Amino acid sequence: MHRSAPRLSRILACAAVPVMLVAVGCSSDSGSGSDAEKKAGSSSSSDSAGAEPTKPAVEPAKFTDLPDACTSIAKNTVKDLVPEAKKKGGTAGRSSDLAVRGSCSWNGLDDKGVKGSQYRWLSVAFTRFDSDQSLGSGAARATEDYTKQVAKEKASEGAQKAAAAAAPGIGDEATAITYQLNKTDEDFEYATVVARTGNVVVTLTYNGAGYAGAKTPSAADILKGAQKAAKEAVGKVDATAGAGSAEASPSAGDAKKDDKKDDKKGDTKPESEATPKS
Image (cartoon, rainbow, N blue to C red; front, side):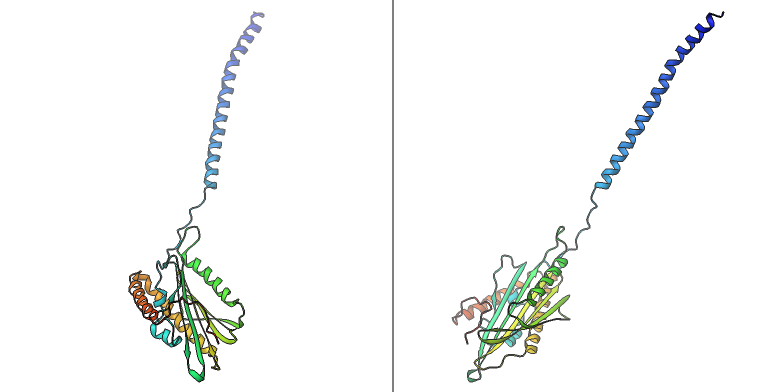
């Protein structure tokens, strides 16, 4: 009896070992499964955090076209500001895409005989900006260009007594820059109005000088003329919002007819901001 008791204890102890091993195995499997779930959850959270948020769509551009620059200013206004203009219909600037960029200019010398002569030069330029998801809305891009153009005009080479002031009532925002400039031994009065309407920037410049003893035009008159013409040009842009390019086509044809009439008089060379010889 005494010998069989220790033997029975050893048998019972050996029988308990597999049960303990199974318990340990189950506990180990449960722990590894929990780690896998944690890793999967961590990976999912990491992916969500790394994903870039969707950018809101930019505002569509207000204007998708530009008016014909040479008809953007009324004929009577051109006649009043540039008497004896060489080309009544203006000289269009070169552009690879008239829906994005366009310009036109007029110049003329009003000879008053012994009283001298009056020279005038007028130009208008349009630049349109499309909305772009990566670059921003057309209006925002136009605002940036508007600021650059104002700074550029303020820093005009050789400008004297330069001054800038807001020009209310012209587009969404506008600035008038005035200054004096001496060239060809004459004193010129300059006025440039830079305006923005929606996604379009309008730059209008008007200047003049007196020749052969004639008086230099007053700064007030030059500024007044520039603001009047700029307001008309901006209004023409606004009119394209619903009209599209249909309105511009007949006007462009009228400008060509005027050019042909002027060409018959012998004026066939394109003009830039040239001044007559004193």
